[in-house]
Length: 356
Ligand code: TXA
Ligand code: MG
Image 1: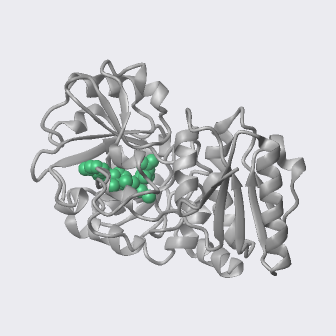
Image 2: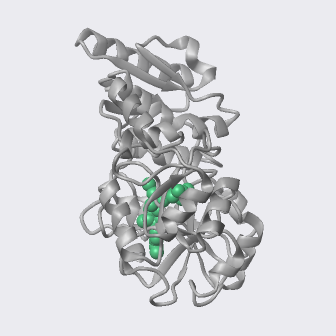
């Protein structure tokens, strides 16, 4: 309900960085912008504070959190060692949308942050507000995306208000986030290999320029969608949950011929309209003239996938706001940022894909 959403967003305490840092230092929870999506932060060392994150989000407790730092000195005490590959990745991509899963110093952060794993996921965000906040708070900041679990990640302060008003202690409004999808989560081996546990803002192609031993996808990501009982569990626990799902039924159509894809999509939309559904479409600029539907959202040009990443989560929220009950979506090539975009789209659609 849009009016309530807006009222709730207004009711959120919008605060400045200094005040937000004090709240974090005293065990509270604060939402803040990063270059990827808004995060919901708490002092990573403080179990009670971290538990407030899980409560506000309704997040399953076996899903560990990323620890955010503002300077390299904060790594000491968090991880037992930084191998050569990790060091090179940090030099190349920090601050930036890359999260490294590394061996944790036992007791350095609350066991609720690591969900009992022996590793800790760390990243240094490339956002001035986030960096100033973490530095002023004087602690490592555990922060998942600042959405209710299962909702699209927030790329605007308003999205955070819609999901979490009343459940957290404040928000620092930094305007729209940049990248729009979350960080890439990787593990880097001593042998120079980099394993992608979650595709995100840093592409496999970018990683390959740094990873002497090559880049591979976590085996669980390769078989996603046709997971069988007994298939490997993802090493990034969050990847096993349904995510980002709009309320309407959603289907993705893939195929080598854009005209055939468009014809298939339009026929499905027309049938849905005839059944009384409210129809929505996510499509790329190149094909927009081929469609009609009640809500059509452009993901930008296929030549410029940064735009699709930037718009994706707000688009999924808008489909709900418009009351769309039946959603069709085009696919993009799974290269570059397209890997992260398709990963999120497939989750949103519950892996409901038609090949034409
Ligand atoms: O861009 C981002 O990464 C955003 C902003 C706020 O920084 N944060 C974010 O957090 O996306 P979250 O909680 O929504 O996703 C964290 C992911 C989950 O898939 C989680 O399972 C994984 O990182 N993760 C965290 N710690 C891990 C660990 N020790 N081993 C493997 N995966 C881990
Ligand atoms: Mg998330």
